Image 1 (cartoon, rainbow, N blue to C red):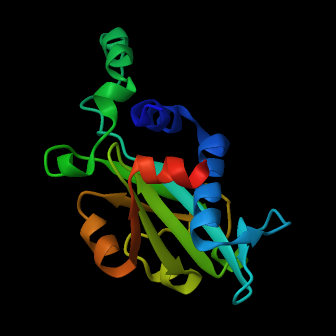
Image 2: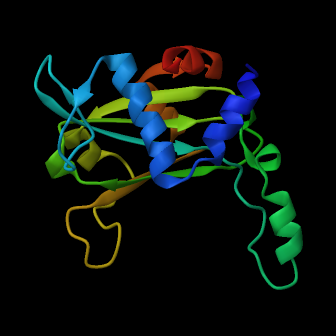
Length: 179
């Protein structure tokens, strides 16, 4: 098995399918149970805590907006090989990941993280810590009450590393965990 194909497959997944991979990973690492509700993702039966899981792939920030003059060039540059960002490259390239659709009233613990090209970083915070997280906004969409978001980027990654980081995985470790 080529780990790069596995990693590239994860980066190619979108929305719900990508989220499901992250949920299975967290469930297996922390021995969580299914929630049997749509309100939160998993349940920690050791302390009866409701768990929410949110992850993002880390991609190099686009250098320019798409317009009618550069649309073809931008599409050609948009492939994974050009955009996936490794942890080692964060001093060279900008990134901005959005941890979104957070409904703090529905969970006790948030596991969140970043899929870099070379490593996966896992963080953990309580729902009350989410509300105090620098950059947290309780407004995700217009007229949407109780759903928020925060960003992780070059500027605030050190804050998350210092305060909420709990685990790092390689893609080989993830592959073995899921096998």
